[in-house]
Image: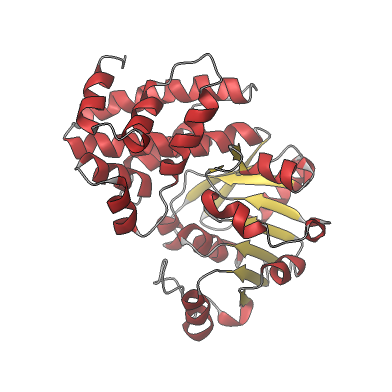
Length: 329
């Protein structure tokens, strides 16, 4: 391929631009922040995210014009935080997606509709499921930027589209497997952020590794129950895009969700934690959305409910986790 587009200017979007440049001649890159555009065009680096990563400026077309970026390419990778996807895309005419293939690397739920991104693109923009894919981890942008070996999964209801995006992402340090479990993998990528946030809260409260191991084991069971409800398909939950993604997000030093949770456990207010982090912790938004989705299901998810109660019901983290202890197996 000669051209591909990336929508988003954060750390994961920046890492994806690095990956794509291994396989395409030119990347069209939409960013919101003027300082990112100026920094890339002047110095070949994203001044706000992964600033140590240098890009060949002559192969990048950085723009604030979203429609022009999408129209210039055949393949688009969406990497906008889920809370801002609708506002970002609403400036576009529906016709702009004709003939395009789109891949979501956004690990969150659209709060306006309580849908994962694939469902939203299908229903709001009428993009054919055969033209859509999702790309999932386990992956941290910081390790991709360092060229450390990473395994991704490209999932689509079309095997051809899955292979297409696998070809865009595969390179020396990125291996890509294929899957048809589009919605299961996407929901898993959402809910694991909530559980990583729970791990952070536990550590912030002073719980040890023994408790955290039990917490994560119970999170796997909750994830299994939830995925069977939202998208019942034969899947191996022990594989990389499910448990692998949960583990790296729960334990890694790079995990924004664990960091956010740790601050909450230490006594920060939600507002203070958001302001200090300066980056989006998807688990914060996901905990409310998944809670609302789960309310219509005959299932029990005590860890999810614990996180939701702390973040949105202003309940004390210590008291909530004390009650949670008795519900873990």
